[in-house]
Structures are given as structure tokens and as C-alpha cells.
Image (cartoon, rainbow, N blue to C red; front, top):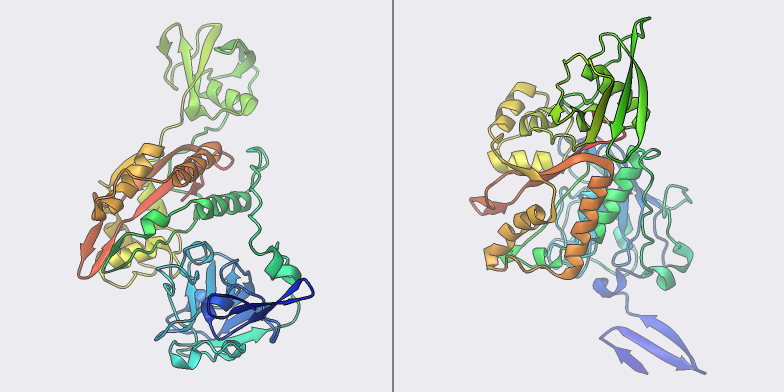
Length: 448
């Protein structure tokens, strides 16, 4: 007999090893596929309650190498439902998808933030203590929720997971997300890719900061359609019989020849170039000699020069006005920020009240999204333990990949830091910031 730890025994029979598992230890059993009981393919949370309306629905099995009891509900407000064992508060808990599904997140048995989350749909306590016999799949709902465990095959469950060979394949590294060309990308691709890059970042040194209690992190991904931001384009007037030939030279040596309809203004030239060259008007500088021509000037020469520039960052005011217009479900960062900042209920449906609160923060620090500015944000948290400026190479590489992702799909992405430093009141301490960019393929949509 070769004993590993306290509960894992390997028996050698004729040169082969058979694993005998003591299933009473949840931390050891959490990542393994049970052989003695079935694992649900989905879990339904039903019945309406004031506490968890946005969390109701069907959660599909999405096991992770550290915990098989992870279930995800997609939709406008995606959530994760997971099981964890604890000496006093074991049970099923809802949480933001990204925080619960990543290593060292709230569903990881070895994480300091194990058990963090929103609601306990079946309550918590010794009645849900791990028994090592599958009895946690008999949990009953409380507080207005009902839990229904489903075991039938379901195409929406275990997507991309080799469940049949789970114990052999669960630790295989995740395949790299392949960048989708900007001309073909959809919002769903961007969400998938951004989730991948966020999950790849090694936040361990951030999560290791402990002041009486452990650090936890939450983040989510939001698309603000029809955001309250200036348009990058203008309408081209209907072509008239009166056109003016114009040659546009570029620093690359390429030349565009246009027939510009009246009123022959620079704004019209920019919009025609935007359609022909796929460069938005906000990224164009039309030059005559060394002078930049404003949009309202009528072009009177035969040749101009196009110089490309970065589109302007969105303003803090436009960002906040756009954020208050959308629905923020339970557990989202924006809603949690409001709760922490005000200690008041979220003003559901009261646009004016929410806007008044948000505009109180319009002086927040707003910088281009660069490595230095991201590290500056995290250093403020690390300095709680005088560890600012020390970041592992794996973390730096992850941040660089994240920024490159934003640069690839967004115009002039930026970082908005809510507080000058981690802000605390009562026994809470919180640090909030947003990464924001105007999508190149949908310029009136903000990625947050």
C-alpha cells in the first residue's frame, strides 16, 4: 500500500494501480467524478422571490478542474451556482460567473475566498454538510426558491468538457482563445474572449492581501448598446449632380480618388473615406499643407492629405450617463458599487436618482488603458500591505494580453478609477474601477 495524504490509497495489483477514495473529505473529492452517484446535468431555480429574481432559471453543468459542482446560467445577467463544504456554512451559493469559475475563486476549495457570493437558494448550515454520498443533490429551496436537480442528458451541459473521461482530462490546459478578425467579430465572441483573458490572469498576489478577512474580487462584462456617446460618423448627403474631384494622399503612399458631392465639406470627405478605407471620421485628420482642416470647411483644393489619429476616449460623464440607462442585475459590479457607496437599496427604475448619485463621481480618475495605469490601480490595493510595485511575470503577461484585446476591438480604451485609494467605511474596504472601450465594429456600443 502506498498512502498519499490521509484518504487517497493506491493498491498495486500486478503492476497496475487502483485508486480507492475516501469520499468523506470534500476538498479531496470536489474535483473528482463520482462513481457511486449521478451528477445532475442541470439545476433549476424556480419560484419568484424578492431576493433573487434575476438568479432564477436553469443552471447547466460546467465543471472545473477544482470543483465539479459548478453550474452556469447564461443570459442578460449570467450567474454561477456552486456547492462548497464548510465547518459552519456549507451549501449551494450563487455568484458572478467569472469569480466563481476561475482558479482561486469562490468555488475553489483552496481559495481564501471560498464561499463568497450572493444568495443561498437552499440556505446554509449543517443540513447541507458534505456526506460523500451525493446527498447534497437533495437540497430543498428556502426563502422563496425551489431547487430542482435534473439528471437527463442535455446538450447545453458540459459543453467543451470530456465528462466521460473527466478524471483523466480535467487538468488539461485550456485551449487558447483564437482572435476573431475585427471584420467578423460579434459581441458574443468578444465576451467569450474577454472572459478567457480575465480567467488567465494570475491574481493570486492580489487575493493574498488580507486585512482581518481575505480579499475577494468580482468582475463582469457589459455591452452598453446605443450608449450616450458622440457618434463617430455623419450621414453622407444624397449625391447631387454637382460633384468635385478630390485626391486624398496618405503617408503610406496610397491614394484615394473621390467625387465629393455638395456641400464639399471636410465632414463629407471624412465620411466617404470612412466607407472606402474603414477608418472612422474620428480617426482622420484632413491636412492641407501643415494645417488641419475643420469639419465645416469647404474643400477648395484638388489634393489633401489624410493622417490617421486615435479616436478620442469617451468622457467620464458620457460613461456614467450610459451606465445608469441599462438594467443592472443582482451581483453586478455597478450594483454592488452603489450598495457599498451608499449603503442604500438600489433605486430600481428611478433614473434621476441613480444619475444624481453617479454624477457625484464624475471627477473620478480617467486614464488611457495602459499597463502602467492598470498596475497603478492594483498597487493601491497591494500597498495595504506595503507590497505595491511587486507583480509576478505571469500577472504582467496576463495584463498585457488583456490590454491588447481591448486595443484590437475598441477605439481608445480607457480605465476609470472610482476612488483615489481603497475606500472604507464600517468594516468594509473596497476598490472599484472600470475598463471601457468603444467597439470598433459597433461604434455606438461600449464594452465595459
